[in-house]
Image (cartoon, rainbow, N blue to C red):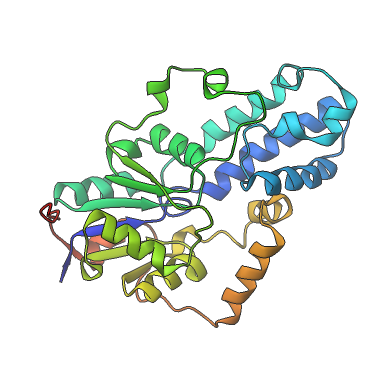
Length: 294
């Protein structure tokens, strides 16, 4: 059977999100520690609280909300005061932001065969969109499904935050859809809703992701052919340990993951060991034809 739709996770499936996060977050906090005198570990603890408040571990306004910095410089413009730290963050992010080898070529090959390419991520809209644009994925994915953004800090508008015209932040090819608030992997209903939205039968779709507990389990529960991107697994790495310490995960998130673990070992139906390009070796793909409008 030839698959006509590929639904793919983004983080640690198309690129190494943990490495991007670790390098940039470490650069930010190490520079902040030097310039403020606040210990690195203290900044990590405070960052976790801020991240949980906003539901993301890559909150763009972190510097402005760290309690230690606010106490040291009440009323100061913290963005200006700690500009070197923010610059270090951006430099490290740029240096580590790249697709895994073979991803671009694989997606281009699938597009050439007429496949519909769909991204599904739990990263918030702005942060997912930034990586999509910088990595050229806007030219490759037909659809992206992600949560909406967190609210801006009080008193700020998008126009005040943006450093480029509004069109700079828009996709030119990918259609970006926001998921309902409170939806999480591995809820099979979300994947089934995505397939229904693009007009795809589950038998036509292939789903690939790096998490056995979230991606693979979700696809299996939805009756969609699952593929484990084993090359993206990062839980054993140094960067993931820091992520655990600074994560936005709440107690409810931890409890949900514990429930997933208790369900037992998840065994994937198919595995990609070295990269996304192995999809082309393991499966047949064909052109997708959208259903006629009623």
